[in-house]
Structures are given as structure tokens and as C-alpha cells.
Length: 431
Length: 133
Image 1 (cartoon, each protein chain N blue to C red):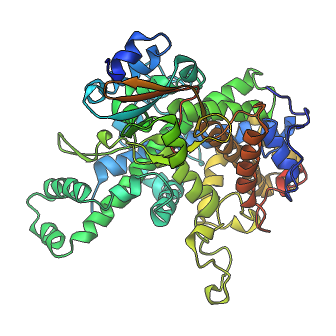
Image 2 (cartoon, rainbow over the protein chains, first blue to last red):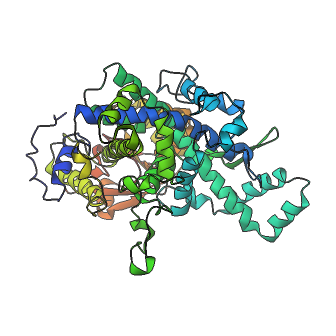
């Protein structure tokens, strides 16, 4: 394997505006510079992200599988014990493939927060909920909505949601769920697309839940490895993610609904949908790159062309976000920042207290750390795609290296637009 | 003449592929008259995949089957015919690009043994597992 400083000699240097980043990727690095400060920040935030994510994936599956078509899902964020105990398939002794050495059930820090909240008082669940002293599940739903709304982002998942086979599966579940409810069944007969569309949304809940079920133990394990002094730098952390992506690439993506004791397979595992193609890649595209302008952050004039005509050109994801105005309540990234704030490791908390305005602007500081960390995750995705579809970095064939170069440049082209934060994350004073 | 499966079973270096085909329940299909063109990654090709990759796939036969079907094309195509075609459609549905600029390349894999005739098709041995996309 080439080292980070080894010059690329078989093909001429890139002339891309981000040539420095492209050369780093070609040397096995990340879009994020390899500094101890960056490594500390990204690992710390992965850990803080993994704890609420442990709630998100469980609740996404709970909503997709059990709440289903409840017309008044007032208690959808009240995770039953069964789902808190649901063993993660990638952690604990019962794992299909053990990624995290920790436990398979809900994380202890999450359980403590759910019980005592920010107020640090043990009060009834309903009080914590109404006081909004809880995990901001709305963030997870916003991510799901981004995937649902952007729809066709590769893979075959979305196409399947419009097939007769899927509608037939939905019909069986809808009839079982509304058994003895002539009003809802009548509505289904009159407006069949209505519940199908709701089912599609619920299938995306399942998709995202199954995606994050993998990412939570990946991030927990990364945090543990870092605490043990196991990462030599940012590229090592990225390589761990690349290996993780490959290891679980073939995990099935499906949607099962439980009505009473019966399981209805809206999307059976036999559809052969995979974690990489039908969940991870669409997620990165929809959430990291595209999403949609958040209401309340900034006004856009669509008539003046301030919002792209083509959905493919949307660029409102974390890789482009101006974190500063995002600090208002109810804005999805702010909800996540608030969630991560509760689970920051001490070293990261200390770091934020030493910079900018300390705790006063801690949400902004950790938001920018999160942005750095997602540039690293995106780098892992880019390197994994390069490894899967193209050639090794130490390939000796110039034609192969030129193909790698073309791929990297095409990926980095997406960060040429002025909103992209790639340039900013190259320096430490962006915080 | 032996079938595609017989050749893979009787030759050294294809034990992972044979195990994968069995796990995915594709033995019968690959013994049918076909004909098929199979791009067969050898054991060294599977060994290049990061740890856990094959384990997850073997645990999930439909998903494993999908990856394997990406290595199979309906019809019998020799090296010369494939290079002439430029792209062929896999049984998985995704296209497989073929390149003959230098030697014989299938997507990002190099063919290390081409045109192995079988009763129900033809095998080209790859040095990499190829993936859709």
C-alpha cells in the first residue's frame, strides 16, 4: 500500500480545482486531512451520534413493523421494551457478524437518558415527551422523508414500491390491519393510492432502520478502538468504515409488518435487496448530498432559480450546510445536534469549551465537527466504490490509474459549487 | 462434456465459488442446458474481499444469488465475441462492460483463463469479484 506522502508518478498530476484532495484520495487518504485533532473530533462525534442512532433504528423499525397505518400515531416515539431489547444483528454475542464488541440491546447511556432526560429527573415518560426532553426522533423521520422524496437514487428498492407484487402485499396487510373497520377499508377502496403511498413511506422507515442498525455498532466500535489507542490517523478510521461497508454490503433490506401474531412481508428478503445498493448509497445521496431546503433557515426564490430545477442538483445536505443559521429549533440538523450534545465524550466536551464561545455555541461547534466526520464517511463511501468498481490504489497499470482518477474527479466535482464545505474542512480554524 | 458446475467442482481454486453457488441454491440452474457464459472469480479473487463480506452473503442466499447472477450471462460468448460486443447484460439485470484494449478485461477484473468450454456454456476465469454499479 502506498503511504500518504508517496508521489503519484505513473500518471500526471490532476489539474482539478481540488487536486490536493484528489491526490490524497489516490494515496489512500480521506477528504478530511489527517490530523490528530480531526481524528479526535470525528471519533468523538461518531460516539455521540451512535447513542441516539441506537434509538432511531429501533424506533424506525417499530414504526414500520408495528405502528404501521395507525391513523393517530401519537405514541410512535414511545419505544416498547421489546424494541429496546431487540438484539442488534451486528453487536453482542448473538450477532450475525460481530462489529461492536459491546451489547446487542439498547445502549446504557440511551436508557439512562430516556429515563432521566436532560432534566436529570425521573419523571413519567409522557412528561419527558411533552417537555421535549427526549430523543429527537423527528430528525430520523426527516432523513427518511429525504429518501422517500428523492426516490430514485440507484438500487431497485424504489421501483419495487410501484409494482403489482408490492401493492398485493400491501393489500393483504391493509385488510388485516383494518379488519372490522369499514370506514378505513372503504377509504382504501375509494382511494387505493393513499394507503399504498403510506406503505411506501413505511417501507422507507424500515429501509433506514435497517441501514442505521449497522451504523450504530460501527460507530461504537470505532469509539472503543480510539479509546484503546487503536487508530493511527484519519485514513485508518476511514479504512475501518470501508471494511464495514463491504462486510455488511449483502445484508438484506426488507419490510415486514406484524399484525397480531402474523407477519406480512411487504418487501420480502427474497427480493434480494441489499444494504449497500438499496439503503446505504441512496441514503448518502439523499441525506449527505441532496435533502431539501429546511424551512425556517433561509428564504429561497424558486422563480429566480435559487432552487435547482432538477432534483438531482439539490445540494442542501450536511456536506454543503452552513451550520450557523441551522441553530433554530425544529430544524432537523439542530435536532440531531441537540441529541448528540447529550452523549459527547468528555474529551470533546472539553475541546468545545476551549474554543469559540465555549458552551454558548457548542451546537454550532459540534455541528461543524459532524460535518467533518461526514466528509470522512463520504470518503469511505467513495473509496469503497472505487475498490468495488475500479482498481486498487497501487495498481501499476496507468490506464487503470487514469480510470480511478476520472472517478475521483467526478466525485469531487460535486464539491466545486460554492456552498460545498470541502475547502473549509481542510483547515482547523473552521469551527 | 462436463457442465459448468462440474468444471468448477473438479478444478482447484474454485472452492469459494462452488460453496457460494451451493449456498445460493444455483447449482441446478447452472447445470441446466443454458447455455450460459460464466465469469468465474477464483478463490484468490474472493480472498481479496474485506473480512465478513462473504460471510454476510452466505448467510443471505437471495442477496448472494444476486451477486452471483451478475457473473452470469445468458448465451455462450467467447472472448472474441465479448470484446466485439463491448457490453453484455448479466442475469442480474445490470450491464457488464468488456474491454479488449489490453488483454481481456471484464469490468474491473482481468480474465486469467478464457474460453473454457462446458457442455452448457463457457467459463472465463476472473481475478476479481465484480460488482454492479
